[in-house]
Image 1 (cartoon, one colour):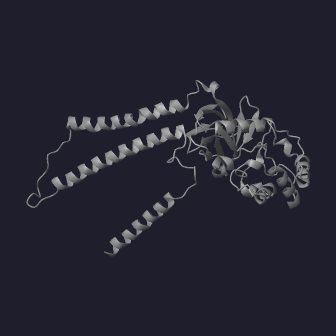
Image 2 (cartoon, one colour):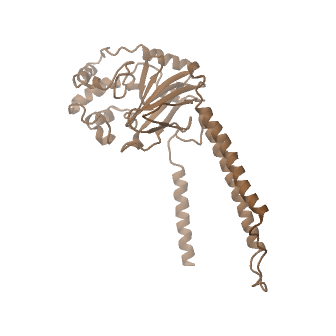
Image 3 (tube, helix red, strand yellow):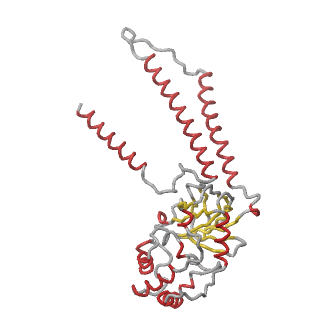
Length: 350
């Protein structure tokens, strides 16, 4: 009895932990609550395979119970040997054909869905965005729009958006669970997929391919807004003047420090695609800093003074002179006022 009770406690503990962990996660970071076309296709496949597996489990358990009841050892039949079915061609055909049929039932819609989401035959009629994966951030260049952003990807709802993806270093994987499936981002070739969001909102994206020490911190956001708001956002981004001087004196000092410390060698403000670091045009509107920190001045100062402590292995570390806290606060004030549009993650989430 003691051993049985011990096993029961372990089983209860594991079950309780599994239930608790099943409730962990972030809003709009789940494939089980689809908000886009690709996620709908993935959910259909999840349900299909789940129903098939449940059906197989029920049938196998039913055969198992029948076998236990019908062929159990009975009193007076200790030497009884049931009829052997070894070499029964009919049974062997049945349990060979049935798994093949089940695999085909799963494989056919999976293959069709894969080719569907990679179909770029009418890409010219829709929004096209060049996506570049970097350690450990994402870069977005809107083809034909002269709009460049990083980390926050703005898209219109109800419309296909084609993503042409390439890596600048190692292999990454682009994944927005609530909107669509994954696509590898390779340094050798461009992979194309399209996404389509049904509802406005802010959707979390992840890199799903181990790419270095800060792989788990390589987050980004997809900001889905109405088509009208998207057009307004594009117009606002196109009208940005990179040389505009801020009105606030602290921000002015920050702009001067930003230029004096050669930050412009890596970062661009405006539509320039030449920068090797994240584009900062709408930095003040971003939903996170470095993809993971809350967008506060304190966190930005922390990032500017010691980026390695926030994102190990990032390429910004030791690329500029050490900043005092006052200098970092001035640069932070300048960057946080880079807010060219009223279309923001906050407005999309409301």
